[in-house]
Length: 199
Length: 250
Image 1: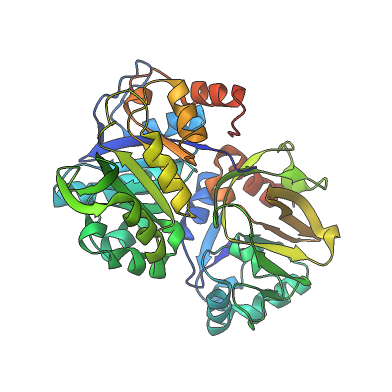
Image 2: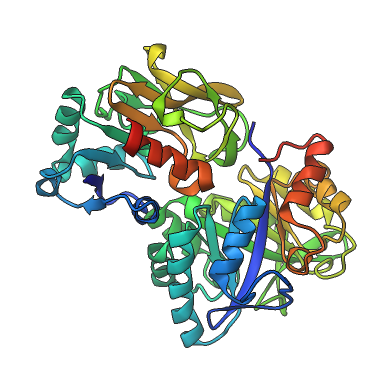
């Protein structure tokens, strides 16, 4: 069973709907008790870094997620759920993120911010997440900040928006995407399916 | 690079898509889910649904339409028409919409933009502006393009961004339905005045005009209704043309 973590940040329903459409068993978890039978965790989210960290802490999800990732259990971060893996973000100075990846998040300096729309990825790794997803596939992005990981070895794909930044990361069973697979049409659904079936 | 978006716009009344939908191959051309699926297959980058039914009943049914479409079609979905307050936004977003578009309600109460952005995030809030040329400037109209507010449309776009709108949907009342092309000057000035995406709407008749909207009008996306619904062009036709002209499309 997949648990989609609901800590009050944004629309989780579309992630749930995408799994439903794929006939994959997924549930929205509003408290840590509901993670007991979970085999996989999805951390979605839109909104501000600092507010999300606060909500993760208030709902007690924060420590559970860190332990989950440290145990290398299957995890998928989406959009803000990717940024939260870092130590900090220039969006919310002084706030400490989940810190399972060394590095921080920065704001785009060029172009319209946030980036809204379809942009393509350049595959950097032969990841199971990208099975049947060719290089230069377009996904739907919606974000003003991007991650800058210290260890670039975890970068599975990059995207160009004025600068080239990490749009997919993979380290063991820890995976995260900056775009919204649940809003990226057939290829987005393919990626979610890959995560469940191949990762 | 970020692609320019092609967005089909569907008018919905009492749960049915209305106005000029003519597809021989569709069993039920008034069914929002079926049309959404078709445009998704053609390569549409997003979908916009406008609730044109003025009744409470129509709005209730719209929630159900959004629920159904978002369960079967996985591209961004914007809903406009009849959104008057935060509670309306919440219902539509909860049903599965990604963004809500507001026009008249924001002109009457600009704080609706900031309230919506604060609760749901700017990325959810689309400011729809119906603009009509008035000499050297443009005025923002309300109530479906019927009433002139006397507010300068460019200033309204700039203010809308400050209040929290994440996108501008810019309709030219002058060009709408003429097939004479977009109001390129209006589009360009708005696009250069704000730092959020601008969606051009109203006036498209040819592929070249869509290219002009993007190149000369600096639009980030184009919204299309009857041209697509009457089958004059498919989304794929438009994208192939733009791609040949060197525009980045998905």
